[in-house]
Amino acid sequence: MTEQDSAPKQQTAKALTGLRDLVLKGEVLPGERLSEVALADRLKVSRTPLRAALQKLEQEGLVVMIPSGGYAVRSFSRQDVIDAIELRGVLEGTAARLAAERGVPPVKLKAISDVVASLDAVVAPGPGAMDFGLYEMLNERFHRQLATLSGSDVLSREIERITSLPFASPNAFVNTEADVPAFQRTLVVAQTQHRAIIAAIELREGARAEALAREHARLARQNLDFVTEEQPDLRSKVLALALMSG
Amino acid sequence: MTEQDSAPKQQTAKALTGLRDLVLKGEVLPGERLSEVALADRLKVSRTPLRAALQKLEQEGLVVMIPSGGYAVRSFSRQDVIDAIELRGVLEGTAARLAAERGVPPVKLKAISDVVASLDAVVAPGPGAMDFGLYEMLNERFHRQLATLSGSDVLSREIERITSLPFASPNAFVNTEADVPAFQRTLVVAQTQHRAIIAAIELREGARAEALAREHARLARQNLDFVTEEQPDLRSKVLALALMSG
DNA sequence: TATCTGAATAGTGTATACAATGATTGAAAT
DNA sequence: ATTTCAATCATTGTATACACTATTCAGATA
Image 1 (cartoon, rainbow over the protein chains, first blue to last red):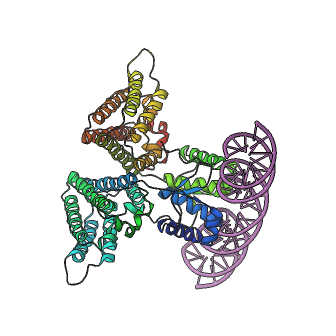
Image 2 (cartoon, helix red, strand yellow; image 1 turned 90 degrees about the vertical axis):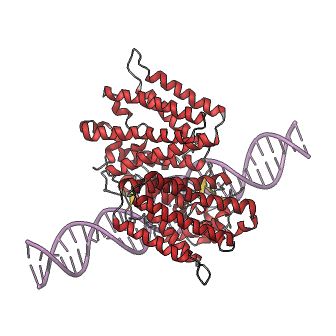
């Protein structure tokens, strides 16, 4: 069972999504103190569910507590972003390894293979333009299913957590790639890795599955390097990087 | 800087420690619904800080949300415990690898080497009985410093999280070992691994450092197996296992 | 006896009021 | 002009009251 994000109640949910939007859209700057009353007023909720949402966002890592009290938007260094991506690779690698070592029921293997097949159709060069929205959806599904293949709730939870950081999400840089033709080819590479990971799991090759999943995450690292160093004007398109200060 | 656990305020702190004690002491059974009013009354705090504490405990993984509302004590399967230990090994392994790959400032290396040296003195067979309290303190310090050696706040945070699960703590099974002489020797093995991990980091041998740290965590796994399979009467001594249902 | 219905009840989610603590601004003195 | 002290102000932490929902228990009916 995939972690259902422990269904928040109405007002708390509204505060949560509203707050997330505010920080991701950059409408509140990193380091800035988050005034509870102002936010509660702006989001049309009471302070109680707002504080609950803030606490949840602290758990997600988007905000941090101020020693004197209250919360502030967390600012991420470039190194933080790199580490988060690396950590996702490590965790997904562990999921792949455990899946290979422990074995997975055929029905689950079939399910994720179907997702890979669907991704093939999207990535394959066809007449029209590539459907990036569809790619994102299938890609997220692949990574979510990979996490569950381990059969470990503890691990799945942790992957869910680290993935909730916008720049550590598997789709973090897919949006960017729509504009740069060279990037589209990285999706082909990514898809090759998807296939290889599943194959390794099927063959019970734990070490290989782990290494592949780690390398797969480093694709995101590459894209990060490209955006920040070679084509900084693209950075505004990757709204996941709104929180990065470097 | 070590994550200061984002200092809770007075009442919330009281509720937090009180609640943790209650679930660890087994005074509230796994699966049982946690009545907020009853707990607030029992812990002499209002419902507001109590709810804050409950949310923090959900983040730590000790309680889970009930779909209909409220919280329940989480029950851990034997597999959950195994996975949590494995995950600690993976994360500490990553910390060791990153420390080796990226290099660590000499002052930090000196600090953790001093801890290892102190541990040597404790483990070394002397005239009197071994000081397990001191061992626990130094052991915790070693693992905490290892986490920071990576230089990655993101990773340190995650290690802090998984380590907060009582049975995934580096000291989870040290208490038990006081009574069983055979266990005392495992501490010697553990200490050897401590040394080897630091040596590997110093030599910039990332892969070795990672493998060693992983194996080091599996010592806990061994102890778990021993307690549950060979000497179940010891289980009551390991209060970290109060939450395990198997 | 088993099941369905309904009301009583226990319990959470939310709003708001109050208290306590930290920040800020202004004035006064050196 | 700068620094220090004090007082006001803003903001959070906590308590409590209210409303709404789910759960449970009793009673009636099949």
